Length: 218
Image (cartoon, rainbow, N blue to C red; front, side):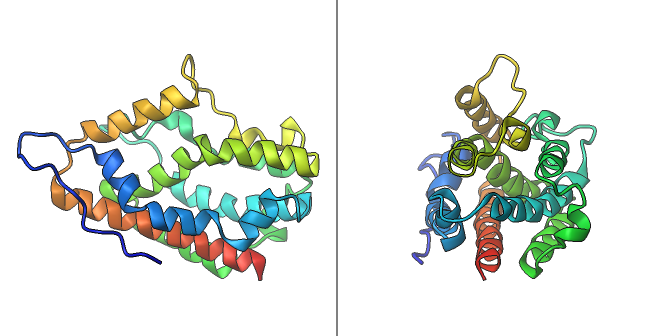
């Protein structure tokens, strides 16, 4: 895997950081490595089954439960938008997939448990928590939309089994909402040291996801 170069900061102290662009560029290799894992490509290529998708979703139920355990807090920046929460939709989907007992029938894999534990650990550090918030929710609004379409096409998943990927964004569609999300990231006016921590944690997030995909394929 290529090691990302140091985060490129603006040349002048007065030029604002485009944090979202910096993070995206610095984590591109890790992102690509995660989304091209064998399990993911097989699932998206129609080589597996709806049961395999159910296993996948159940593992990420543990992840989102940990991610959302932090909850909304007074004084949260707008980027931590409560409307993004996915846990209720995931549980509804799992019930529609015949796995309402997912806690018993799909216990966390070792990689899943490690990721969930890490998410609970960073919940009080807004910069590190933002990294996982960014990778998960913007991923759902981006590649997640393609996942929903492919799972429906290849495995006959119904809308009731795919509510995870449907967001109530008001008048915004996914593209406009993602733009507003990135603007909210930039509005945090993070210091360079904080941006470095954010980048490191985003890269870690993709590695945690890769580990889950590898274990699902085992």
